[in-house]
Image 1 (cartoon, each protein chain N blue to C red):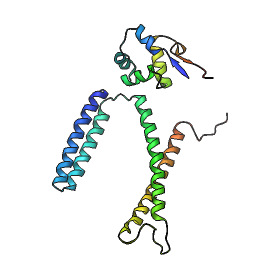
Image 2 (spheres, rainbow over the protein chains, first blue to last red; image 1 turned 60 degrees about the vertical axis):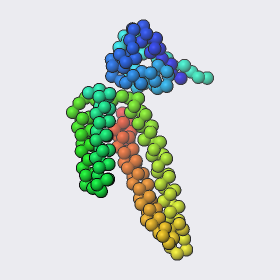
Image 3 (cartoon, rainbow over the protein chains, first blue to last red; image 1 turned 90 degrees about the vertical axis):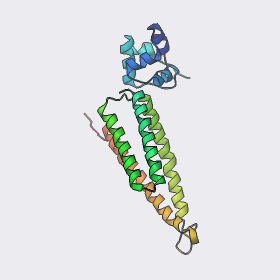
Image 4 (cartoon, rainbow over the protein chains, first blue to last red; image 1 turned 180 degrees about the horizontal axis):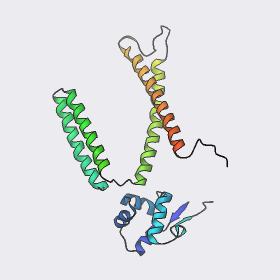
Length: 67
Length: 141
């Protein structure tokens, strides 16, 4: 399972979901779905997020083995 | 143009089309219905093309899954329906198509061709997208 720290990073940068969605070029629903671990973003969007927050991809997303 | 604005325009166009269709149905005018729907479709296509529209990847994923499910439900349904409607009886006619229900055999034929058409469209588009996404080529370097 892939978990993410998008909510934490967004809170650290003091952005609303709407503002982040505008910056990344997606809808607010997408940000909500990613934060709630209901949707896995594409590689392109994941890199966009990493670029936006100036962090490595692994700092946002991490793979957790379910077994 | 952002998605919200596009959705507002789409709502307005839909209200326009529905009112035109209502007027056409009341006035028994098929031509007006076709013109109304055609105008609406062209207008929406132009609004989408001339302005930069934000395509949301989650929405595209949802659309893909919905389309896949619609195909998975619709194709077997009409396939089975056509089989049942064309099930032959002794007289050469369908079991169900007797007397005033004779039209059911024609309906079964339409369903059969429709299911074949769907399968053909699916196969062609599958091969097209498979090639587009790097499938089919066998390059060994």
